[in-house]
Length: 119
Image (cartoon, rainbow, N blue to C red; front, side, top):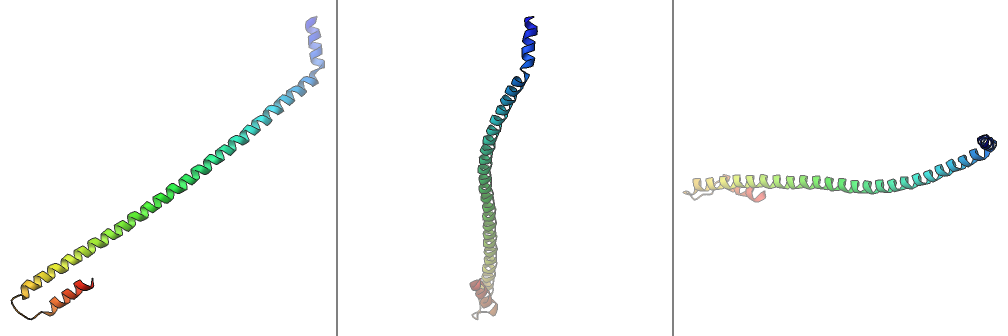
């Protein structure tokens, strides 16, 4: 009989139990939503920090590429001028040996010296 009496009171107060359960569920979801908002803000801060690091890394890579291009251009120009200078010096030496026995200075020699001076 005690069991039947317990079940009767339980069934008669069902509105109270449903209300308490609804309040508990609503409280849990409100607390969970607040924690979720806090986590989203933390992730947004982490993402913004990583984005700034990514931008810094990209600018460093771009500047390194530009530096490599500039250094390559300078090296190739130096090599070009060095090779041209060697060619002109060899030509002048050859002409000096060729015309050393005679006194007049040939026109080719003067042109070669002028070319070497202008470059």
